[in-house]
Length: 450
Image (cartoon, rainbow, N blue to C red):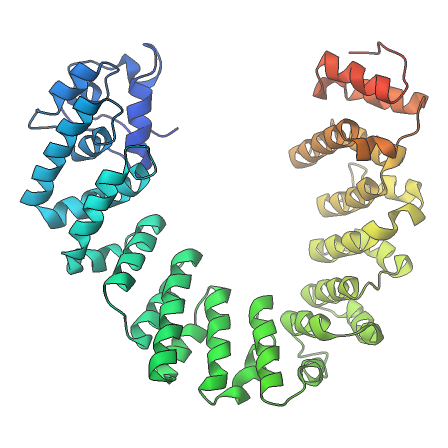
């Protein structure tokens, strides 16, 4: 928990996040010897967070009381402390509305979730309605919840033009806030008619949902011919909207997506993904031909497309588990999970040997785990002491999931000595009581190596 630092005898804590003030408040009330609970009680910040409500209330009258802690005390569980803090906060807000709103709004938003936090949130909301310049500044605040809050208030206060809303949506990095501005832009265009500049702004956004909205706007703007440009977008949502736009314009999205694969040397990874999304099982040969493409990303997307079409031939996929490309090996392993029981265990166990590349080992282990049974448990136990910390962690989690769930245990034979030996080797993952319960359910004798 980050609680900032106190840099001098009378300096207030320096915190980077709004939530650090509430963290500080909690840690001061910890028993002495923990966190800021060991700080000097003479410090105003400590007195404002003191476990004794009388000390907190008295500290609110200090001229150097930090504003964030006054806001925290305005949500205090003691009525007398809460009332006094609200009086001080009202005075500060009346004396300097812009400065107080800019400084405290991110914190007040978090405090608003408390049982006594509604007062401050409602008070700040009303004050922001009277300070449009501050509200505009908060729309660009670095804190995403603050931007979201400011966007809601701004949209409630006045309807923006389509271009302004679209530009804000395109520049936004928080998906929830971007949706607010996107919806506002769409509503403005629905009321006023299409606006090419607003549509272009939406189409240039980084967030897929915003770009998808821009693609749907192309239809009403009379620009359906631009749909082809987005059939190979990096987002599946945008690609789906582009195919809808082609259909709305009387075109065939399948034919256009297939045309994007006509030249294997110029095909893009997202063109492959887009084609697979509208392809049928009869198109599997085209995707299989791309499995030999020189670019790893194309091969990986082709394998993902085959899996989407439920065309997972073990003879094709098994050799790709040790492909030099991690993306290809991963897609091959995902495709093999459904037919893992058909594969011989020995070669798969060889692929998880320590000398193999990390991505090969993970791909093979994914298939072994999907196979389940004794083979899957054996692979997990072998990796439990591996030098790769990520594999060790995954193996431990999968052993616990297998042995502690009825579905996982269902794949293990009862009274099997090898299962008992594997359970002994993984005993450190369980308490003694849980271990004996697992033994009972697998009809294994009690005891074992600990």
